[in-house]
Image (cartoon, rainbow, N blue to C red; front, top):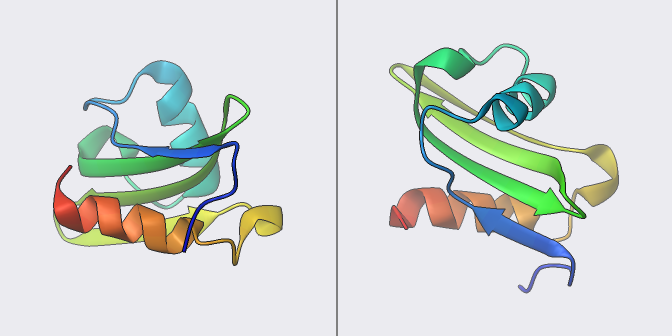
Length: 84
């Protein structure tokens, strides 16, 4: 499945930059964003619309409601699994 044209999926370096950390915390409020071992983010129009975060002992994925069901969930999981 292909992503919508304006969406890109990226694996930013850790620790996350302040703006990305804030966006990840907004999408995944229960995730310990300061303790992440891996993060993959979906970005559309300069805004973070999805996140798949991992830390020692847990992981969570969240996508903004309007973007669900467009292949973003799978793209986040695939990039996390590939380690790319």
